Image (cartoon, rainbow, N blue to C red; front, side):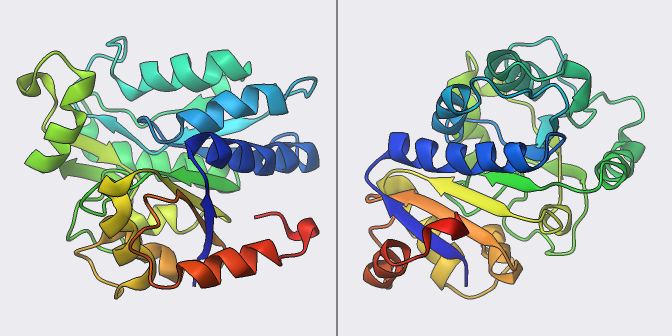
Length: 259
């Protein structure tokens, strides 16, 4: 079972996870972080700026979860641009050490295998941040994705495109394809940290944490991981049947264990 931590709000979630990342970097100056985009991880990145004050992060490495296919890397909503704007520059990371899947159409058939090879060459991801879609997807692994899947090209569902349209001027500007780390790739990270806020994510969280292991809910793959942490606010936790148990176990957890 994943560890479930229920906090008051997204700011508290950001502080908690940022502290764990800072501890990791203090232990290992060349730590490998798995970086998520979207609005969910923003409180983590914001809190991390203060947590890393005075730390040398020049050797920290990063791997983004995904990228749109066919989007210009300089487009403000390409994940290359988002990661640079929201993570690399604010945290002072070394740009050359932070990688994003290659979404250019030329050579796309080989881009997934090449990205997985880069992750392996770095020694694997130490801590992978994850958000969750309202349909239970993580990364861009839509419902039906194989738990053994590797980094590959996927066709986005209309629901995902509609969810992401807020970042674009119009729905028809949202790409239809992406390149994403597969569930099998994600599960190889040493620590998974999945975050969710708000009532709209409550059912997806309940299905992922307490529901059956099923391809219809890609995020349920975290049940297979030996060190998975789910950090949610009260609204996102509202459909968890064991919420009181999660609160009790976290309140009585030895402080030295972290999350």
